[in-house]
Length: 390
Image (cartoon, rainbow, N blue to C red; front, side, top):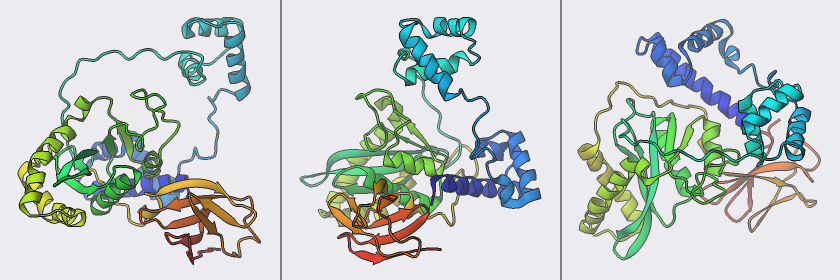
């Protein structure tokens, strides 16, 4: 599934779900628009387009078109050249004034500042300290989820990572399990559990770990231009990914882990559990229901912001996706494996073709050429089947 197609499918599912809730008088137009992240006027316009043209009317008409306000590449290159050769050391504001006055530059200061910062020619302003205050919970379930991991001696004499995904509005834990090491695979495992059980949330709040965000400088700003596998999957699903810049910002997660380190360890010891698999079964079936009954609070608002996504194959999104080039032997290299692409009616061969390789949590692989799967493989790289859709 192409990323653009996935985004459109998620947006369509979210709109149709909220449209149904508005038609059944569960929500008014203003509430539906807020949950969708658009203005009330936009929601009314989309409703009219859906009534007139069906799902076709909801397709984003900007796709494939360049913005009329976009700065031409030659002018952007000229701006960089002028700054390097003639205006080096000028502040962005001062430089912008000269561009407008002396060089006929017709674009705004904000674009110039961001472009020079992106090119590494102008420094970013230092972050200013802010007065901290307690952040109120989101009013509806599914508006924001927290996900975090904690390294601790959860089992007797054994340090493991506990991965927890919880709701901001209620504090209820939707997913928790122990794993040898926190990372991309554990994140996808937790997200799949929550998305299948509840639907898509509006946002996910995490720390800035390397599997969540790319941060060129340790402890520095998040590089939104280079997505991790988790960031790519969340963007594809239309879920906003929010990164925390301090432990204090993740206070709810930190307090939850303090409770778990006190109670869960004792409950596991009391049950005589020392095995990882048995511990995860106990957590899911016994501990979490009791924990949520004790500590979860009712949400401030009625209803849910979760969006069901029937028809969306989460396995093809919540996986490691990497681009590869097919070799002369019609094989794709992925880590230590050679994936042999089978014969296909699509084309005589795939030599030099760019393909996408999906690595699933169970170690299996799949190779995609465009939107079509051309081969599926087990964890040893042995072909399982080939799907050559016409």
